[in-house]
Length: 263
Ligand SMILES: Nc1ncnc2c1ncn2[C@@H]1O[C@H](COP(=O)(O)OP(=O)(O)OP(=O)(O)O)[C@@H](O)[C@H]1O
Image 1 (tube, rainbow, N blue to C red):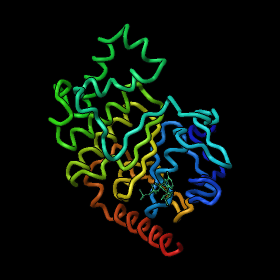
Image 2: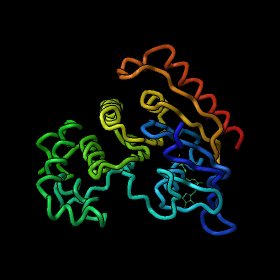
Image 3: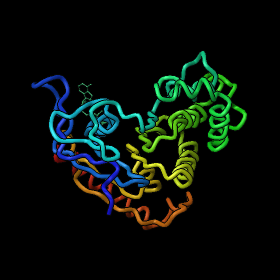
């Protein structure tokens, strides 16, 4: 068995110095290459902190974080990220927004200048994959919230990251759009084989998408339990009406309710 692709070992992270908020403590979790992991837990339990630790935006005070076998000591360039509110630059077209990470990451900047057409074609292909064919020249404010979130996913994927971190990416969307985007993510994962860590409050989203769901304790957060999700792939949306699916949702729900009580 090869080493996990993402490995968090006994991590403590406290915000704001010695007397500050202990956000996570003894956090240990491992995600394999190509796996789809979801993280759920009570509000404020440190899910976003976990994302920042894996991407190197915060460094732990104790314990270690490894991505692709490398100790994380600075922001990780092989990760793509998408958050709840897509922060697209309003003065750039959707396509220009998608290309933005390539302008920022040093190693891509030079290539982008020399091979612009190739990258534009890649961005257009991604737009087509998420159902936004032909929308590249629109400005973000000309797109609906769901469309912006689709474009946001393209932006997270443009540099072909080995790891995709999704922090409540569909939280602000209506139920129908959210379910449509579950299918977009499901298909992106199936074709690209990218490793995904999804943080969500939506237990159905976690179970529909993930291979494994990690349940966190109340703050300071640590992993209380993990659930392997064995529903065969590809999963169709009607799976969410399956009694076994509902049982799993209920089980996770009670675990989180218990974790909240334990605060
Ligand atoms: N920059 C910061 N400075 C101080 N405290 C912080 C900071 N960021 C987060 N915290 C605190 O750390 C704890 C964990 O926060 P985090 O955002 O990781 O939780 P979360 O599980 O993602 O929350 P939610 O479910 O509400 O989105 C919270 O108590 C939060 O108030």
